[in-house]
Image (cartoon, rainbow, N blue to C red; front, side):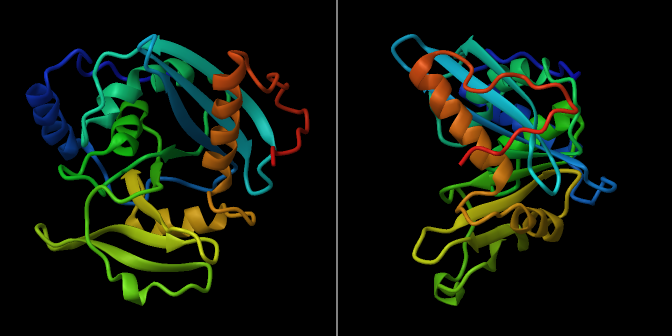
Length: 245
C-alpha cells in the first residue's frame, strides 16, 4: 500500500496539535466506499525500555473474516505518550506495516479514536487520510465526547450517540457489544459516516467484545510482543486460514 508523506513526525506537541487542526479539513465524513469484500485491522504495542513500537496489520475477507495477509513492523518511537497525540506516536510504525500490505483493504478498523477526539482528528482519521482508505476508530475507552450512560442498556448489541457538545454534533457511538462488559467508542476516521461506522463495527462482531478486524490484530500483536516473531505465516490470497480465537 502507498501512503502520502504530508508532514514529518518529529514535531513538538504544539506543532503536532496544529498539524491535526490543519489535516482535520482533509477528512471526509461521507461514505466513500463500495461493496466491502476485505477489511483490515491494525493494532500496536510498545517496548518502552527500547523505545520501540510494534504494529500489525491483518487483512481479512469480509464477511467471513478469514486471514488473507498479516504484516508486521517495528520502529523507534518519535514522541512520548501524550493524550490526544497518539497518532504521532503510533502512525509511523503502523504505516511501515501498511507499506508491506499487498491486498489493499476496502476498509480499515483502527484500535484508537477517529472523530471522537479533542481536535476531531484521532489516529483513525490520520491513517485514513494518509492511506486514502475508509477508516473507523474502535477505542476501548473514552477520550472525548459525552453520552447518556443510563440510556445504554445491558442487552447487546446496543448503542447510544456520542456527542461533541462544544461543536454541537454527533461524533460517534458508544456501543455495548457483550453483556456486563465496558462499551466501545466507535467513531468515523475518514470516508465513513457516523452511522456507517457504527453499522460496520456491529456487522464485524462474532461473539467477542471487539469487532473481528481489531480483535484479530490484537491477538497477533500480543503474540508478536511475547515472542518477537510473527505469529501467523503470510498465506497466499487463495489460502483459507481460520480466524484466531
